[in-house]
Length: 173
Image (cartoon, rainbow, N blue to C red):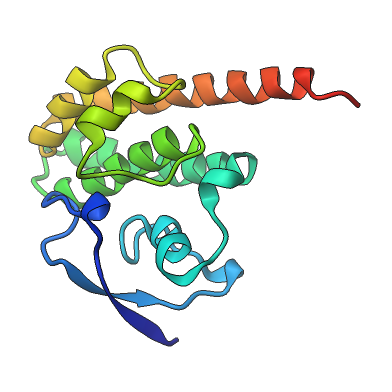
């Protein structure tokens, strides 16, 4: 599989997700998408390689994100139950799923560096998202951050689903 070397734009720069500003972005076929190689892969593909924009096809992407979260959630629950200290990489993937759902559900690409301001402009969002997401991002190793992330993803999934249903009702025929 070929790849492109890219330099992350400011909106993708956040130390929790990317340690370096340069990375190799694989050239994917639409059937090969991996959400996490690198993190936010579909968003990066759209921004750097002019691939499909996932924030323009939320009906397709929300189920993919939710299914991926279910796998991660199950693994995290097992890790926390056994008091394993290896939950961090999966929590970071889970947090990235939340970001993708949050921004794509609002028809926008992900914004990691400016999320604290841009989240205020989003129509579809969780209650107290700023405080809750700040808590999760500053304590990704914590069991309580996992519980909070699980609740936020569930809440956001319901809100996006409701929004899609309401949008379908407004669209004639």
